Length: 178
Image (tube, rainbow, N blue to C red; front, side):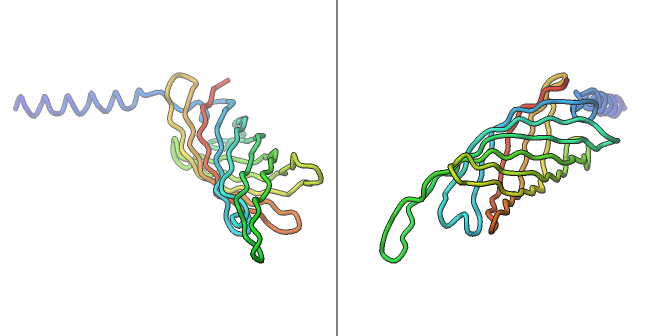
């Protein structure tokens, strides 16, 4: 009987401890996130480029229960790879872009979210132009302190400007509650 009562007390104590964990600040208020972005080209973009890397700033503000407005701006640099065309090998030039996006993030569960964003990608290269972009994503936020969370997200991002360039993007960020 003592073992049963001790087991019940232990289970109840663990339940209270789990319930007392820090909640994600994104669920309760506005926040700013600073992140590292990685891009893995797909389709035609993959033919000339291996990898993209950059950083981004993210702002979130609640607009309804479990729903946040999201605004984001950053920089991505894609590294060109050697391409052979008609017997001639040349390295594709690297290029940079400044993606600016806005959208919504919906929390499916306390820490798991689905997000959709639209925006523009501004080329940093001479004559590079501007592309319309769309980016559906999923992710998870882990609270690490009061008003601080680690955010991991994965997205498909497409840029459309006389053709489509697309990639799988990964973002690791530290979010600070305001």
